[in-house]
Image 1 (cartoon, each protein chain N blue to C red):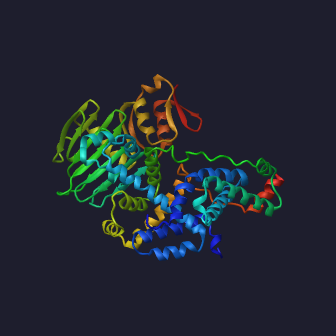
Image 2: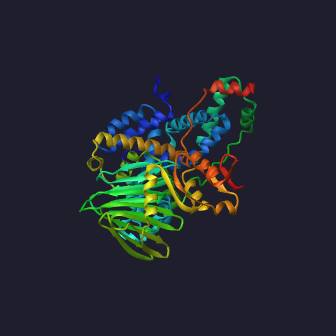
Image 3: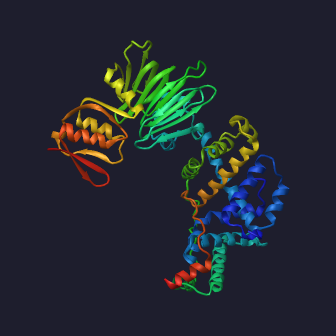
Length: 316
Length: 193
């Protein structure tokens, strides 16, 4: 690194970037730049390259001035769902702040809690992705994949909005569980109040006292239904937050589908007879072996190792 | 941009758009990615030192020629030269840089490319660059908005810009491989292979 010509490209680009940022902030003068640049033509080349990248960012500004919606950008952003949300929420979905959102994800089998600055918290279940952004007017959260438990804090001035591919939900202070399914969105109101708007309808649900039945808003492309949530479903919604999974007489095919959400090595039911077994019990999502043991011992299912990506379940 | 001299603007408009061609050609000559990168940087430095740059009719071919000459000089200095490389040099013909290296990129593709590169930046870098370039806030306004000092904003801008420059240089957003072995080592390895 003795003579200026010895610097390698990374260092040159870094230095040129710093010059541009300083000039942009008015903290360096053009004379300073010239003195630095003229000492080595490599610097001039690096600076020109950095300045070109800087100019290419102007494309963002121009794009932003166009009114035309750009579905693929939205798809990139929230996994395809935002286009619908954009149509519904109109101006609420502003492209310009797309890049200002924070993003939190979990991998398969992971759980994670996101503490939000207003005191709300969001717990992400396995294989989940959320984006969020709060400003002076609104608190917005995008669920683009998976399942999340939401504890929404009270804020009179800023409504809380949950965006999904299936529609927009406005949430008052309370506790909710939102799960995206292939067929739609299940939003369970454990406490508080929620109103859902979609392309095909709107509905609201509220749970005031602890004695009230929990409500579920079931959102599909065909409409929104409000149903009282049976206690076992409330149990299973709360179970995942403890790392548990609860079955109450579901067919093995349904149970396996649920359990597979937590597994990278998936369980596969090999025959119909095995699939129609019904099972109940409480299992740990992080301990598939104990689940398999229970299947083998209690239900007489054969467990067949079948390569690195799957395990077969067969009836005897 | 006021910070660019005429020669820089010319360089950005007529030389840089063919960067992918220069790299591919340099790689073909010297094999190693880091060495190829060195050649391209050296060629850039040389072309920016040409007093008569305005009279160059095909600057991109001029750069290719410089790259070839630089490679040849290195071969001589290294003394041991891989057979494959001699072959390339003897063929001698300069490949034609694709005339439309940049032109074929539509505005839309360009936007997607820039967005994709931006999206891969660390969160703070991405926010600061977005506020600056998309929302048009000044560094001072960004500092207030994000509750940072101006010098921190400046650092995020610089870091983001550095990463972005490198991502855009490779076209598909991949970062450039670190330079590995020195030139001489590589040539010898080639010989004894």
